[in-house]
Image 1 (cartoon, rainbow, N blue to C red):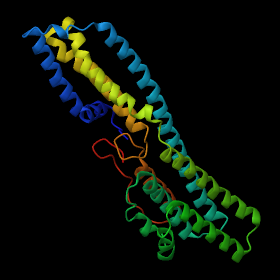
Image 2 (image 1 turned 45 degrees about the horizontal axis):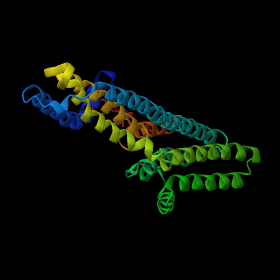
Image 3 (image 1 turned 180 degrees about the vertical axis):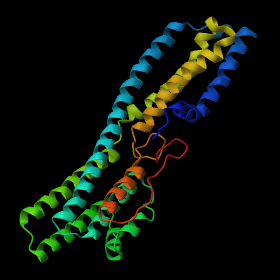
Image 4 (image 1 turned 90 degrees about the horizontal axis):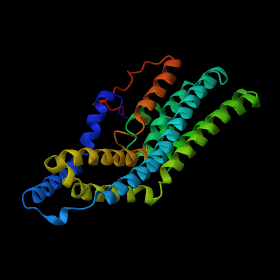
Length: 291
């Protein structure tokens, strides 16, 4: 996620640089053919391109609104994960009479969840936080974050049985685990249900076609400055399309993705500090992007 607004524009320009360079070269070819070689076939009316640009802007706006809704829902569900992880650690300390190993296990949960959503390797953090026996059982499952919740639930049930803790207390703790499972289910739904193909493929194709046709209608009016005007308009549409395509997949690694690693680290710090363990510093942005 881009965190420096001053650098955000430059990052978007860098992301769209390849198609912009290609279309700028095409703009120069068009203006040279028209101004020097007087190619009459380039005298295209501006009205069809204007209508096409208006329709494309509306379509991109609709797609980007849907993409941002997915991104924001993902962020809201991660907020629920954060709150419930903190609540579980507090309940484990106060109602289950300690069990720091459960707090550490819960600190490993967001790292496994991030890996499952993004497809990236979970790294050394789960192994560092989990007991060897629990780590082995969890890593043997396909859905590792759900397996960890299951293992934590078994440990809680065993603790309740051994210490004869009131069933209402067990219900309170188990409800938190259920809320975490519900949040995980919502995140998995976003990951496994992409936007319809007409929202993901058609805007890219039509944006490229628009950038190709635009200088043919603009060269009559703009003349030699056609590359400047066409490139500015093309950059706007290319940036809108690229941002929407990134936002519609909020967990795929990109500069617009949710900062899941940072949130996982924040949860770990909160949980381990509560049980008196030393932890490292939060994760800082890398090149103005929060991982």
